[in-house]
Length: 114
Length: 112
Image 1: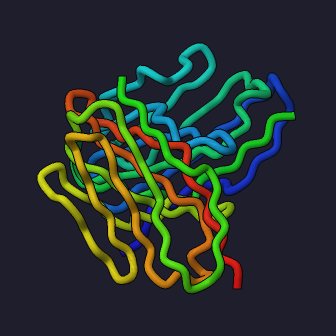
Image 2 (image 1 turned 180 degrees about the vertical axis):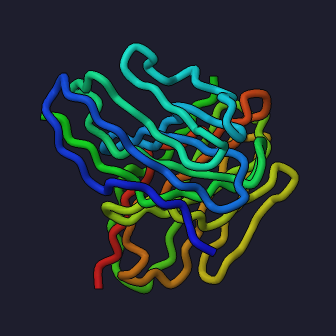
């Protein structure tokens, strides 16, 4: 069974530029999550999708971050414009259903904003 | 608001030792608790998942315990090996919000 795929693995941009990350969850998984992990900290949930609907985006900085999950499969997370404090690893995870089910994580995208 | 704390932040031990990593959480209304491993530059690998009704789970040299009433979990690693060097994260799935809340991790180094 293929795992969660993410791309790109690394990205370096200047502040005020825009960037997009892509995630392909495990086949058949209805729930998809985006996390932000700042160096030395644990991951923090940004947004959670159930199929193509948003379940929780309470910690997403909506003035600059956006995410979508078209057709309930792949997802894209965008930052526009980026700030220095957005430098982090962005992790995508998926689970079979919404709720207390095991989450499977992708390798992450390391973003550096200069 | 659920808060998860891991102590110590970093640990260095010689190969072959048994060791314990600690995790505490403030709200006992949880569905489950997971321990993850994270290697440098990599994503998270799930090690053990303990349901709220369980007291412990074992996988190979790893044993995780859960005391929900006191808000504590421990990860016991037996006969440590250099390949166990990584950051270990614990996370609780909170009831209500139904989302994972992570601790900041313990960076473990096993010296040959």
